[in-house]
Image (cartoon, rainbow, N blue to C red):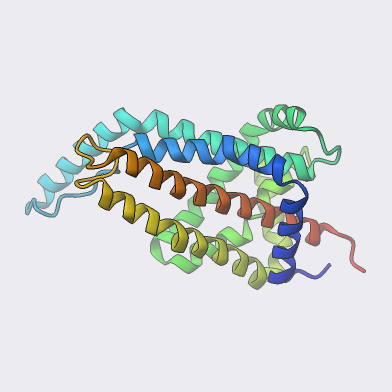
Length: 254
């Protein structure tokens, strides 16, 4: 089957329309709630203070602040991200497990395969994150090359984490542009739609969102709920596009 940007979005939209109720229940629990909790409860990650002229003292002050942040929020942040990844695994299991299990069974299977799944996601995130840090486009390109690793772990179980990453790289070799286009589209949608809510929440919060000095906590909570909703929808869109890409690339050639 041909893999084009339009075909991927058409397939993803068709899946969403058919199973919107199920998908929104899963996404609300596993994508929206952890993201909303992070926005409401986790303080901003400390950054180096440019007001400190001495480089050594600046680095020491930053490391002290970072150590305090990890102590206060590290475990909760890891837990929130783990819940999100578990939800992603559930979506893949629902749509790609050969037996098409119901939600309860899909949750159990996703939990059993979660160690392998999270290992693959961590391995993938290292080069992709480094690529995005150096220059945005290489990171997004790497994400598009590895986007089938998660689907493969459920569609072709019991494949291993590293094997799924290698197979994803091979399967996406001839369709790099449409997959990159899909990743870029979702990424830009998340930034262009979600960032205004974050800026508005920061403005409403006065000296900082999520701090005790927040100017209008109720308004901040409402606006951050919209930001979490945008994150939920873009995460769900990314999952459905990955499923659509796998189905097209794994279909027998005509």
